[in-house]
Image (cartoon, rainbow, N blue to C red; front, side, top):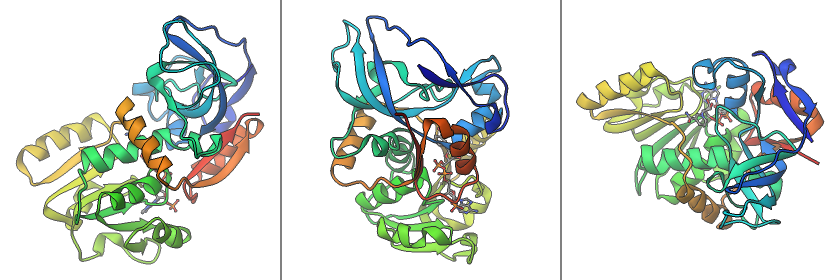
Length: 313
Ligand SMILES: NC(=O)c1ccc[n+]([C@@H]2O[C@H](COP(=O)([O-])OP(=O)(O)OC[C@H]3O[C@@H](n4cnc5c(N)ncnc54)[C@H](OP(=O)(O)O)[C@@H]3O)[C@@H](O)[C@H]2O)c1
C-alpha cells in the first residue's frame, strides 16, 4: 500500500510517497480503507518542525489527521462497527498517518459517516468541525442573543463556527478577506467585515465572545473588542499562553481561553446530527494522492474558502 512519510522537518519537498505492507490489526482495532484525507494547518506546522515539543524529533513521521473511509476488517472485540461501514475519523494530532491506503484505528477514533455527505465532504469534518463545536459550545459558551466576532471566518474552522454560532442564536460578525464576503453572508453571518479594507480592531463595537482563528489577533488587541465580561478564544496553545490565561482569568472578567482539541464520541455525534441537518461543508479544492506536495503547498499559502481534501483512489 502507499503511505506519505518524511524523514526530516522542512517544507512540502520532504513528503515522500512510499510503499509499505498493509498493517495487521489487534482484537480491539479496525483496518480502514481510506477514501479521503483533509488538509489542516496543523499538518505543515508539524512537518515544518514548529511543534517539535509535541511531535518529538524521531523519524520517520507520517502526515494526515482526519479522514473518511470504509471498514475493511474489524477485530473480534470491536462492537460498534463492522466490515463495510462508512466512517469518518481522527488520528492522534501529533502522530498523524491518515495519508495511506490503509490505516489501523480504535473504535473511539471513528464515527459513522453522515449519510448525506460524500467521502470527500465527510473527510473535511472531524478536526475543524470538532474544533468549531468545542469553541462555540465549551470555550465561548455561545448562547442566544450574544454578540460573537469570528476572526478568520472562511477557513476550515470558521465555516463551521459561523454556522454553529448562528444555530445557537448568536449575532455573528465575521471577519474575512474580500473573497469570502459573499460566502460568510451565505452561511448566515449578520455582519461581514473585509479585513483588507477595514481594521477589525477598530470596529467601535464590543462582543460577548471574540474568536480568533487567524492567529493574527492577540488577546491584548482583542480587549478593545470585548465587553467587560467576555471571552477571547485563541487557537494557539503554548505553555506561556496557558499560564497567561490561568493568571488573567483569576482577576479579569475578560477571559482568555485556548483551544486544545479533545475529540469525544458526543462531539462526533453532535457533528453528525448537524451535518445531517444541513450544516454546509465547503470544499475549496480536491487533489489526488500523487499531488500531495502541491496540495499542501497551495493550502499553506492560504486564501482558500473552507477545506482542501486529498482523495485516495
Ligand atoms: N489548538 C488546537 O487544538 C487546534 C486544533 C485545530 C486547529 N488549530 C489551529 O486553528 C487555526 C485555524 O484553523 P483553520 O483550519 O480554520 O485554519 P485556516 O483554514 O487556515 O483558516 C485561517 C483563516 O484566517 C484568515 N486570516 C488570515 N489572516 C487574517 C487576518 N489578518 N485577519 C482575519 N483573518 C485572517 C484566513 O483567511 P484568508 O486566507 O482569506 O486571509 C483563513 O480563513 C490554525 O492555526 C490551526 O492550526 C488549533
